[in-house]
Image (tube, rainbow, N blue to C red):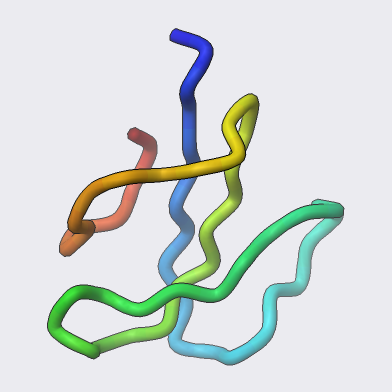
Length: 54
């Protein structure tokens, strides 16, 4: 699929990695901050409660 995303959970407010484009997101419950890395897609539509490779 052309639309892919990798979500990496993190309780930190920063992301230490060799990745040039990422955003900080929160779970729909307002829980942990997470690092969202979008690949081959500029948008992501949907509610995310569990994070992983999607």
